[in-house]
Length: 318
Image (cartoon, rainbow, N blue to C red; front, side, top):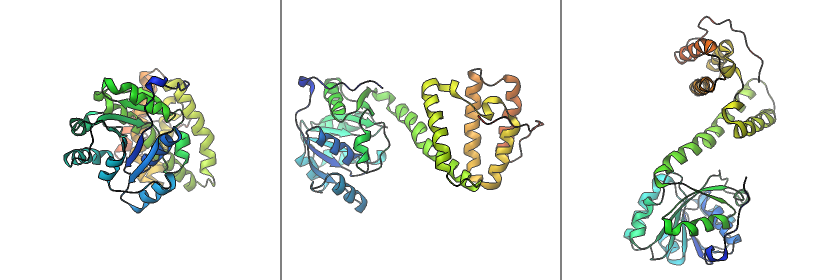
């Protein structure tokens, strides 16, 4: 990971009054990080009791007020609401006159670039899209995790330095993402991070069913090594029965999953097919073994045992 470079004094934004609209897991953490950099949180809005408690814990003493009042008090406003709620929120704030000319308006959605803020731009706001590529817990540990975290940054060219300086002040590393590539960028992150949680949770459930008392302790070293290898080597890090073409082993997996965890079968088959495709494309899976394997996966989707005439020999676990 590259070393975070501090912005030159001329590029550093002035000390700003910071407001947060949407006290979910992200907003309070970013505001607390900006506070450490010398900015001043002044107001937070939150709807649920959980979000209000989170705001009070992460930003003690900062008043909880309606969204329009947050904008009245703040020079820099963090819009940290769910993606689907963002366009309507921006339009509503602009139409009600809550947006002030010269106000920095920052959203943290991965899906959207700066154009979703166009209604506020027409009202004179300065639009920035700063998406932290990090999973958040809603606790103070999130502030620590921002150190070295990449941010997907999208903004008008004239605001690029200001956007990047804010990210660096939060300890992050700015990565410029074009407006048209924001959905693809966000899909890539969701595919890797969100689906990983689901896969790990399913794996732990299956290990418990198999009698493993501490599945987290068993998976920790294995998954840590797999992640490190994948980040270093990409597809060359592939191991396991799909890469080896062990159709019998995969058929046995499908049979056991149907017996003990039928809800996991579709995900297993989909990931196995994707793995087989990548292993074939990179020369890791021998073509002569791929036919039986792909037959197992196709039959498995139909609910059969999928052996397709294979000998059922299981390879060594790797």
